[in-house]
Amino acid sequence: MTAHFIDGRARAAALKNDLIADVERSAGQGTGVGLATVLVGDDYGSAAYERRLRKLAAEVGVPYTHRRFGTDISQAELVAAIEALNASDDISGILLLRPLPAQIDEAVIFRTIDPMKDVEAVHPENAGLLALGVPRFVPSTAASVFHLLDSYLDEAGEDRDDFYHRSLIVVVGRSNNVGKPAISLGYERQATVQSVDKWADLTTGIGRHTRWADVLIVAAGKAGLVKAEHVSENAIVIDVGINPSVKPDGGIRMVGDVDQASVAPRVRALTPVPGGVGPVTDVWLLRNTVLAARLRAGHTLYPAHHESVLETS
Ligand code: NAD
Image 1 (cartoon, helix red, strand yellow):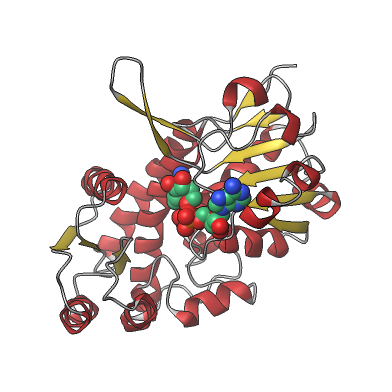
Image 2 (cartoon, helix red, strand yellow; image 1 turned 90 degrees about the vertical axis):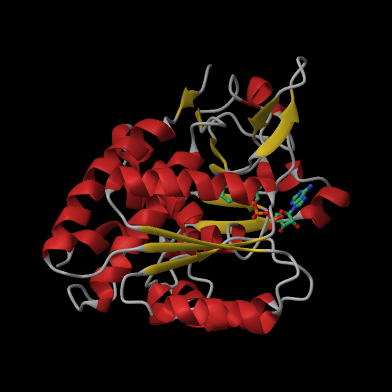
């Protein structure tokens, strides 16, 4: 068997078209859509992400602001910068890129972001709403994972509810920004959810858990962590990892956490890297930025389900 590759680029293109229409609609309603990104230092991955968002924002017509600071910035200076973005009527969404330098207390900065502009749901109020199953904003990477899963199931003609209710979702990696939100979204769909982290890898090995997964979501940041022996034949595998790998000619290419060559022939479906989770994540962040503008303008209430948020007004 050769896996079906779930095409993230095609799904991102469809979402992007919807988003362009939503941006136009929001502009007509005077709701002040705008994305601000904040980067401290020059982390390679974060800087690349910032450039992608800048380009995408221009393509979909979302005004874009970027604030970049040196790694010697003080906590008070960063708090002041976030407060200025909170106060701007032109900005509906704020994305704080990570990592932050050691002198910055991440939790303080998260609490500084206006919860109504907190499009990655890092403020405790939004993280709490997500954990309670009533998210205001669904963090973009986890949203992308489940959008790809849901749309794959739709195309395969499977009843989503029936599938999730009888399925085991195993999430490898439990960071606050990817793994934990993905776990929450699995709960929201009433699946059985299991969380695996590096301690399982260091002791029994992850295969003891991952081999039972109907859906395997891998977000560990370890190139090639998941190999053929870690997956079952009927698994749907979502590879979130993005890891730089040196090519024979000295160039850099991005690879996932899943060893695509050995896993693809064995499983039911797999997201490629690049071209899987990443493109949808980018669009979702902009989508949340439009949603934030509409929430602030009172055009839509707290969404009961993230798939329907832009259709509710
Ligand atoms: P992170 O470093 O914050 O968290 C990684 C998690 O994996 C931690 O819980 C860690 O303990 C766990 N882990 C580490 N080694 C492990 C192992 N051997 N076995 C099991 N668990 C292990 O990283 P993150 O921000 O969650 O990102 C994870 C990966 O996803 C990275 O490669 C990142 O670049 C990528 N990413 C992709 C997107 C996208 O849109 N595709 C978005 C965000 C992050």
